[in-house]
Length: 336
Image (cartoon, rainbow, N blue to C red):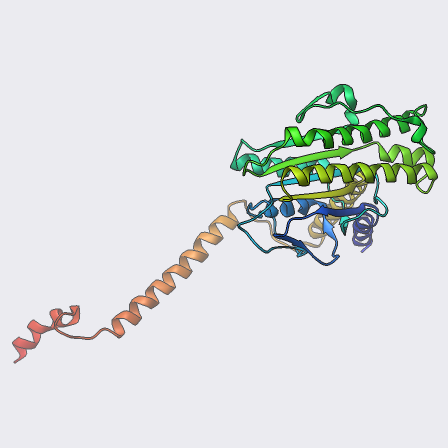
């Protein structure tokens, strides 16, 4: 009983702590999002895949998306993951609560791998902005040339602070990506995915406080940069693009998942121990399930086959062209 309580508590921790937002910045007319039901992050790959016209592999209970025109689907998905935070404040867009049950890179690998299975000629671009300009000077979109940061425009953030400076560099990279999109991206009729990861916001929250003036300024700058990226991709794909943002606190995912798995393993061990002590179940060999299924389904097929044969013979017309007539006609003639 205690183990079950701990397992339930661990599960509750996952849902309480590992939370975020899933925000739709732009959706084409053929894709409609409705309601406000929570969605698991592990289902985002299914949402994005379905929007691009791919078959959904993992069935879930989330029904917040519907396709109105399967012949006019988005040509691309643009997803921006903001690591380490659970909300982006008053950002414009359709918002859903997000249960963060996996890390951002796991979602990306599942989605990109699914597209690669179908066609290796898609544009699958993932840019981790935390790598900085040195690593992203020559990105998958080409050379990025961010403008220098105007320190006089800052109110609470400061370039002298390492955390602030790294975050501001990511903002400038987002704006550089928005400027690069018109020349680097073009609609070619094949589904594309662009995956951008912002990692510098959390350190700003940690050092200044989540409700500080610096944090609010950082959110404002991020939302403005996201607006630029959104507009750039909308223009490049003539509005036939799905653009979304989601927040993901990877540290909470790892912590709560490990806690959940530890209690789950303990529950399994306790259950096995109780079964062995109370002799509640028999031990079966590994071939038991296979043999059981073979015998079961053979019996089912044999029974219905025999039933069909019996019914067919019983309803057969004993005319001249039937096997019953041919087997009995000579005997009938002899008797006469």
